[in-house]
Image 1: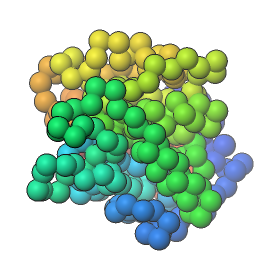
Image 2 (image 1 turned 60 degrees about the vertical axis):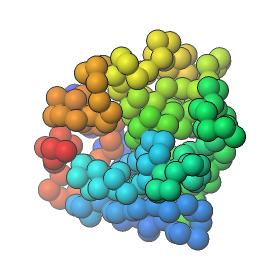
Image 3 (image 1 turned 30 degrees about the horizontal axis):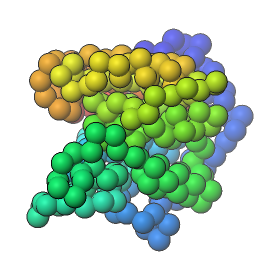
Image 4 (image 1 turned 30 degrees about the vertical axis):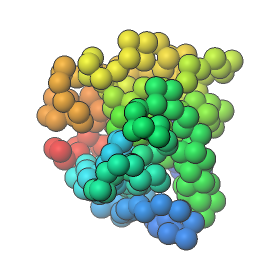
Length: 255
C-alpha cells in the first residue's frame, strides 16, 4: 500500500491537470482489431487498464478478467492480437509472427508490427479519448506481456502509468542511456522465464518489482499470487478526489 504522502501527491497531480471524469469509449473505426471496453464501475475514469492476452488466445477471457478486477476509478480495455495462428482451426491469435513456414516457433521473433499497433491505439486513446499516458496501465500475459514490456522500453521518454508482465520477457536487450520511468512488475514462474529476464528488465526500466510465483501454471491462479499485483496497482493507480473516495485496495475484488 502506498503511504499517505504518495496518495496526496497523486491526488494533487490529478487536481492540477484535470481530464474529463468520464472518457468517451474507443472507436472501432480507429482501432483495426477487435477489443472490449468498459468504463469504471464507479463512474470515474481516472485510469485505463489495457489487457493483452498470450499466444494462441483471444481477448475474450481477458475481457472477463478486466470486469472481475473491479479496480476503483479504472476503465478496462482488452485487445485482441492481429494475427491468426496458422495450422489451427480454432480462434487463436498472435501479436507478431511466431512460427516459420514449417510451423516451428521462431526463436527471435520481431515484435515491431505489434508495437506499431499499440502505438496507433495509444495515439487514439490520448488524442480522441482524453487519456493521459501516465494514466494508461498495461497488463500482459506471456506474448502479450512481452509486447507490453517492449512498448515501455520503446516509450522510455514517455512514461506510462505502469506495466505488469506475467511470464512475458523482453525480446530485446535494452541499452538505454535513460531508463524507462514506467513502473514495471515482472510476475513469473521459474520454468517459464529465461534466466536473464530480470536482468533485461533492469536494463530497460528504472523501477522493477519482482514477483516469483509457484513453479507450475500460467496466469496467477490464487489470492496469494494476485496479492502482490494488487498491491503494486494500489501504489501506481491514480485517484481523483470525488465524493465517497476510497482506498484502491478496499475496492479490489478477489479474482
